[in-house]
Amino acid sequence: MGEPAVEFRDVSLQYRLLSERGIVSFKEWVIRRLTSKMTYQELIALSHVSVSVEKGRALGVIGHNGAGKSTFLRLAAGILVPTEGVAIMRGRLAPVIELGLGFEAELTGRENIFFNGALLGRSKAEMATRVDEIVEFAELADFIDQPIRTYSTGMVARLAFAVATTVDAQVLLLDEVLSVGDESFRRKCNERLESFRQAGVTILLVSHDLGAVQSICDEAVWLEHGLIRGHGPASEIVALYRTSVGDEAVVGGAVAPVSVVPT
Image (cartoon, rainbow, N blue to C red; front, side, top):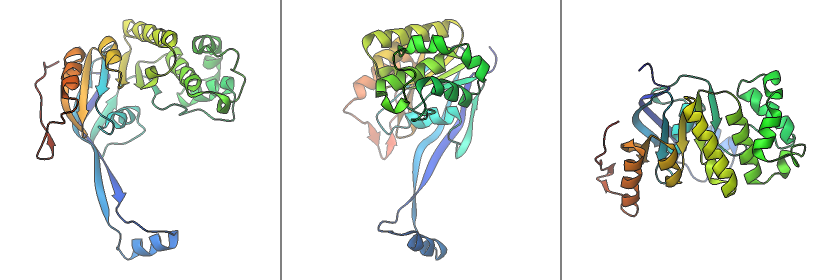
């Protein structure tokens, strides 16, 4: 079957947060730092997560706000580095992780296509051959030469999705981007994702839209407090998550496990 496109091996990520309150100046911070009078607390964003996704498969990542979903995607994109373990991505990445990420507000939409393409490792010549397709898909012909700062959130999302999914990629990373735009545009996005799947592209989708996870993804990971609470076929994990709403099922500070069908 070959090596998986996405592989997390016992990945953990924790942040060291300053516990001090009331530090009002840089001078005071330096004094406390030098005199070892500062205290910190550890925030565990992900804890011992092991997941692999075969090439051409689609994985949905679900859970409450703060469960670690976006952290998972940022680790996959290489934006964050694990505190422990290793996150391996095999293939050319196309991330749509945060609205406006990789765009410059003062540049026009057209200029941002080239700018964002460069950040994705694409040449100017390559992006030039794709500009018309990107503009058409994003439905921004009347605004493409206006500064991005004049765009609505939905317009930025459409442009970001169009750029990421028009260039060639082996792994596509999506964070809630399918939740913006009207029904017609969401349908276009789903159709494009389906064409990606048929072409063998691996997809990681973080979303609160459980219907989208069920329809697009082969399998799903349910995160709770940075831990994997369930991993299996998307329809089964979504059903388990839905029944858990309102019942955190936390025992002694740890997430209670649930039964899932192995993948």
